[in-house]
Image (cartoon, rainbow, N blue to C red):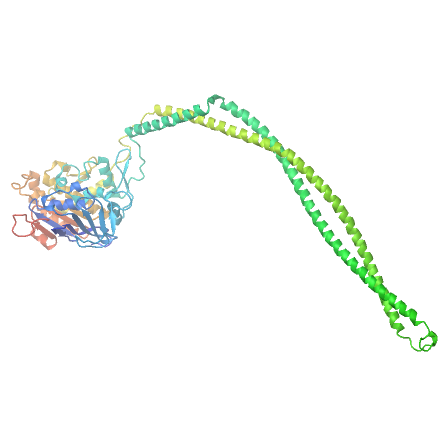
Length: 622
């Protein structure tokens, strides 16, 4: 394998059943040749590969030999996923994918399930195309740009060519009888350029335009009938809605102005009330503080009074003691001036002086206390009067609020009622305008004329430089085979087929058409490799060397003159040698009725199907 070439390699093709032996083919990386008698399963091999690439089960022949078989298996080597195995029931349905090789008939559960349709996330086509770097591509299938997603089924005709298609007169690019010529050509364009049609803007066909317009008319009719019914039911006089709205707008503006005035008045009253309530709260707090202060001052005054009373008693006792001290001695009768002992009179006088000083001090403090108490009582009286005024003001404001609020509520209610009525009228006007717009739209749709789509709306297929380069690639193949007549190949833009020396491929005999078809497919593979374009790198060709048939024994009849010229030219051996030289870039599986050259055994894996009458070798695929 050439390093860097992203390609598929088929390692094993097998079918299994519960009570039948496994039928399988082990294939080499490069050139594989399967040849032998008719009805031995050679063509079944091609169809089985097609089936395992997503073809519908009806495309798989229900031959007798396959009775008892139920599953088909395909071992692959992929560029990204490496070794994988695909399994599918012969009855059809989804694929099982193993992320490694497994033995055919294994009971191991598949790693993933892949849909055969190119839809959704997990499908075989997207999985395999992603392996060669192709994802989310679109192909224009019509002249007006209608697109289809590029799938593996679009690539299959360039990978597997059955005998009928190989010798057919139609172009090698034909994908199926059900696809348009535009799609076939645009698929070739994508394969040879790598540029898809995602950027193409679709222009609907005349029938599609008419169908779309008809659908729009039906939808508009339904919408118009519904809107008219609602308008007639809810608004019996729709013509008067404009004047109603004007009157409601004027009334609404007036009520809005009055509502703002009442709201402002209420806001001011509420502001005044909050101020009065705050003032009352502060006044009550101060009154409480004064009551507590007066209580404390009264207690302090009682303390002062008690202290003065106690000190006055002490003073009186000292005075009595002093009076007694100035009398004759009761013991000796001596006069006071003749007595020698003072009996502590100095201490008594000193204590008496101290008591009088303390009483004076307390009297001064009690005087200050009385002044403070008098001041607080005056403040208390003032606060009481303020509290009365605030209470009166609060009652006045509350009365005013109670008087203004109902008027504001009434105005607001009237304003909201008018607003609801006005909104309803506006809905009616909107509905009337909608009815008018729908009628206008219906008129436009009724007068619609489909635009004719030009046949040259988009460029279709390959042309110019790309077509010439592809023709040169095919020419190189033919010259390597030494195709008779020094072939000069050109590309036919109309049919997207090749011309050899100016001669249309379909104008040749069956064998020559088959050989040129093979050259086209191989040339396309070479072209993709030269341009580094994605290609799976698998080529299965059924009967490309039909010109080498035995005319008298073959069901395809005698050889035409151009077939005889090919047969005599020695193309057959050079055909296989060329594929051997290209086997590093691709895997080839060639199906033939006649044996390959003896030298092919040196470089190819060869299977010989001898049929039921053969004595040596393999009977057939089964």
